Structure formats: structure tokens, C-alpha cells
Amino acid sequence: MAKSGHKGEKEKGASGPLQEAWRRYEAGDQVGARSEARRVLDEKPSDAVRAEAEALIARTRPPTWAWPYAAGAALIVALMLALAIARG
Image (cartoon, rainbow, N blue to C red; front, side, top):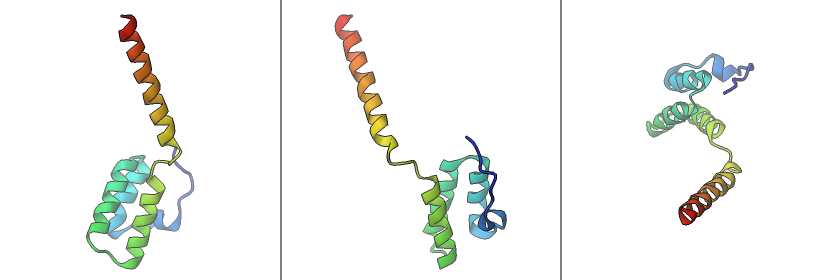
């Protein structure tokens, strides 16, 4: 996965509770970064940390347009499998 060359102020100076989440995000582990950010949100953080964690979660969320394509691909694979079994 390609990484952005641009580092915002929050990513550069990440310290405190979100440091591990940003480190994982920069390493390309979006799932791990999202889970770390959710863990920080469970600990009742300050408003600034909460906003940063929510921004990180929004940044790592899968795009909504991908779900219909995934469902269509699964349907096609299921139809191909059913056809292969029927022709058996």
C-alpha cells in the first residue's frame, strides 16, 4: 500500500495515547491503527484526543463504494460454482 509523503502536524508530533495508532498507520497497518484508535476512544479521552482518534478512524475506514462490488463478485463466484457443480 502506498504511503503519503505528506505528514501533517498531528502525525509528526504524535505523542501520548495515539502514538501507537499513528505509528501503525504510518507503517501501513490500517486495521491495527483503527483498533488502537478505538481503544483510545474507550478510555474517555480529552476532546482534542477524541477528535484526532475519530479523524484517524475515518481515514482508515474502507470506502463505501467497495461493498457493492465485493457483493457482486461473491455472487458471480457463487453462480460459477453452482454451474460447475451442475455440469459436474
